[in-house]
Image 1 (tube, one colour):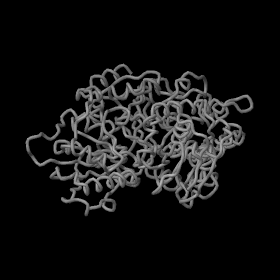
Image 2 (image 1 turned 90 degrees about the horizontal axis):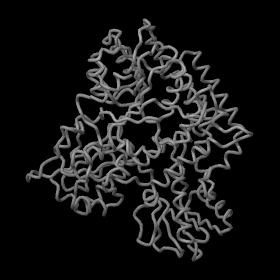
Image 3 (image 1 turned 135 degrees about the horizontal axis):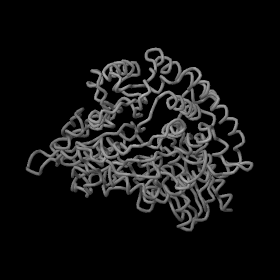
Image 4 (image 1 turned 135 degrees about the vertical axis):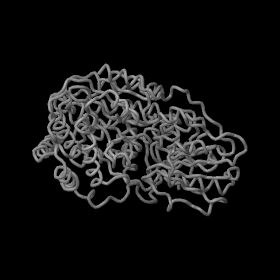
Amino acid sequence: MTSAAGALVLLDAIPDTLPAGRCIAAWSEREVPATVQSIPVLVERQAARLRDEYIAWTHDLGAFTVRGRDLRSRLAVSPDLSFWWMTLLAEKEPLRSPGIYRVLKLRAVELLYHDTGCRGIVYAGGDDVLAATLRRWCESLGEPFTHVRHGSGAEKPRRLPERFPHVMQAGWHLLRAWMSRIRLARRTAAVTAADGTPRATIVTFFPNVDLQRAREGRFWSRYWEQLHDLIDQRQDTVDWVWLYASSPQASFAETLAILDRCNRGGNGRYRYFLLEQFVRPAVLLRALRVYCRVAVAALRFGPAKRAFHFRGSQVDFFPMLAHEWRSSFFGVAAAEGSLLVAGFEEVSARLPGGRWLLFVWENQPWELALVAAWRRFHREKIIGAQHSALGGLDLRSFADQRDLSAAGPGRRPTPDLLVVNGSGTRDLLERHPPAEQIVVGEALRYLELQRARPAGRNGAPRTLLVVGGYKRSETAYQLRLLAEAARLGALDAFSRVVIKPHPFCPIESLLQADAFRVPPEVSEAPIISLWSEAHAVFTANSTAAAVEACYVGLPVAVCAPADEMNLSPAFGQLDVPVVGTAPELVEFLRDPTPANCRRDYFLLDDALPRWRQLLAQS
């Protein structure tokens, strides 16, 4: 490979002999020679800056003016809701929009380029979209660009439905939703009328429940835990709306059977509904009208594609987010958003309300559709409840302050109160609050942590606990590092290695059993019961177990993502090691040291005094 001596050389793979260049960088690899910069590592080092720039850019894009009106007002589907808030672009979810991570990497490349005084770029790799983006950037700078093509492209092969035009994908999505869920839900269970008595309303995911209780007619959600007992004590009448998420715990057909049992067990005091029950044919037609309105409006948005760059940047990253753009306005995301807008409008019109509305908060589009529709029909307090730990690069959870101060449909719908589960999330959200008022309440999902104790140092056999993630890619990378560390002898100090896989990600095909001197044990026990057995913990990237282990007082290391966004709840919050190479894991395992985690990171009190006060005042 040849290159100009003053250029930035960007590599898809590290060659045996490094090329000449002012700066050498690896686009995807973490384990690099000392003279090479790793772009994934740079993204994490500059995470706060990149996060803030991306959040500001999403606001600026929504405010982009086309023919005298900004995108948000052009996408108004009611006086108080813009469809802009339903798009992938406004959602900022790295898992649903993998292009976001590529944009942050591209920005890290740009900052590196200017910081090192490079002149021109040489890209060696097979990503044609990246190559075209870098070429246009160099042309705007008046600098040379060379593409040395080798390897395969970055995009994965698309599934058959994804090869059709986005409009056809949207139609297929709505048809499948009707045939596989809505039709069944409406056939087996009807939305019954209330007697007019004011009722509280709670919207939550299903399952993730105590399945045994649910099959006996007692709904007990792991999202709310002991809040169920508090509601019992208060004698509240509650309408529960379930949002079904595909899960090994219960199929949709099983969910319908559980719904029936819980309604019989609720005796009218507690009523249970699935969102799909509210989608009458007229509601589906309303969703189609919303979709058509959005698609027609978006046909004029071509000029907004010029706004795909950060402030002060000359890099046009529209190609990185082209899929998110098309899906948001014409494809599956547009269909999903339209169905949510119409569905929650029907929910809000049909349920009596009158007490308070509580929902599980993750800042997803469905929440914004719910909040806007509920305010249209009801006047009671709306409360969002954070249920898990929150990481520094979970972009969806953050909002630009200007989005909360706009008027009309340009204003982002927000709850009246956002209840966070401790000082960790409260402090993280200070710069980009997603709601006008944030209060701290007891951490419902983590109350058992106050009784957990780490294994003592009393000479008992030392145990390494490995906690897997729900994504196959992150778990495969984690187990590969573990196997490499085992071959290097790092596990010799442990008598046991216990692996706790995520229910969504079996590990049998990923585990390299021959790498271990003592075969690892695979445990299906609840994670809370495993803390007392562990002396050190190695977690997958996305799991909140890293924060739990740190809170309990265990030494914990988080596996870095191979080449994805670092979505660990510990990242940017707790001083725990992030390991992305086998030598880094070996170093941790040879001297595992607990990190400090302040006791108010989670607010834990079984009596739930803050939740009691909050509901009493609502």
